[in-house]
Amino acid sequence: MSKPTFINPVQAVPKSWLDAFQHGTLKDFHRLSADDTSAALATESNVDRIDLERCIGMYLKRLNAPKASLSNAKRIAHPNSRVVMTGQQAGLLLGSAYTISKAVNAILLARELDTQDRPVIPVFWVASQDHDVNEVASTHFLGLDEALYSLKLDLPQNQAIARIKLRDEWLTQTLSFLNQIPATPEFKTWIANEVKAAFETSSNFADWFAGILLRLLGDQGLVLFDPMDANLAPLFKAQIKHELSAPLASSVAIETAAKKLERLGFNPQLRRAEGSTNLFLEGDDGLRRLLKFDGAGFTADRHYSYGDLEAILEQDPARITPAAGLRPILQDAVLPNAINVLGPGELAYHLELNGVYELHGIKQPLLHPRMGITMLEPPIKRILAKYSLSAAEYQKNGTEVLKQKLFAQTSANMSIQTEMANIMASFERMEAELLAFEPAFAKNVWRSKATVRFQIENNLPRKLAAAYARVDTDVQNQFLRLEKHLMPNQQPQERYISFLSHLVKFGPVLLERILKLSARGAHWLEV
Image 1 (cartoon, rainbow, N blue to C red):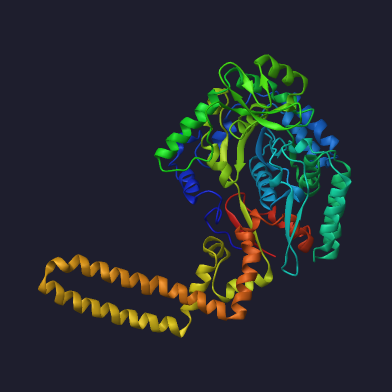
Image 2: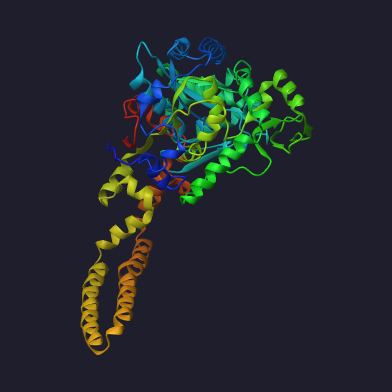
């Protein structure tokens, strides 16, 4: 196993976001410097820890959480407690593998910072308020036969994930899907049993996700938090009322930050249209819609007054939920959060939220880029070693680097290199003669030489390398294997393949190994 010093290859946002954050270029957009855990832990939090612990405890007991998770939740009641937060949408079979990366990252950071006088607890936010069900309805596995397998459930549209009641046929479909995956029988049976047990103790789709996560990492003390749970949703009422009292202020703050980032050459991840609030309302029809404000009242599925929304908030607080630009603020208003473990896209939009934190009188926690974990199976290790290629290089530049490495070993490449030297030598002689005749020709000669050099050193080798790879069946098969393992569907492995895909092949030892990694950086785990 190797540990490169960079964070994550091939990300959803430009690498410059991460570089800029880590090097302090965007220090005006976040409160604490990168990795300043001391300042994060020293930040005061006046949340009601006693009530918080009581509500979380009821939620975890409903899910039959392991003893370690329940015990850690009780520690939140300590007057000096802090939490390390992370979270993800409640995807089918935990969604992509980075769900586990985030959860483990929070566990590792909490362990590192935990003391008896200042307990630090890892908390995973189950993003059950989201209504884009297409992002959570699918899962993807890579079998031992190196074929990709996918499952998509027919979930109802535009409902908050926590409102989606479970159907028995979904469990049948999922268990049938797991059964067809070529994997290690004992590990496949283990995961199938965990998935079934979580289903049987759940009432909705978000619970099912939470139940599986607890069965894998609950015994490590991971605490889960579902903002749609009947015991937890009321905790947000005060902050939602505060937001409704000035419904466009947070949108203005986000737009102000976005315009500043644009002037610095960045592409903001969050934008707010005129009249758009940072709140969603679940209408009388059960569908979730963005609330808009026209200065006199609110609209979603129909017109609402402030009094209407206040009444809804009292009757069922889970019906009014935050958009991405407000969710972290509400989260940190009710939890004594010190650190937010974030994916690259999340990090980018959190850099627009400092002004929203200030509007709510809350101090922004430390932003911590999540760790990366990529599994390297034996055949992939051999192929990479054969071509002296790292997994990071492959994920960053796709097959182009490999093609170039292959072509570098061919006689055609040696011929190009020899002829290039001859051509450049001819240019040098011609340049001397032309300049002696007319010095003004210098620019024309330079341009011609640069064009020829680019074509011979770049375009021609690239095209010949691709042609070489196409006619070699073994090379094509190796390319395909690398792609399936490291860049399935043109996405990095941990953004596409479920972590359960690895568990059904290699078993619980993988969890043991990743729990020994560093909480920072990218990791390439050889299995």
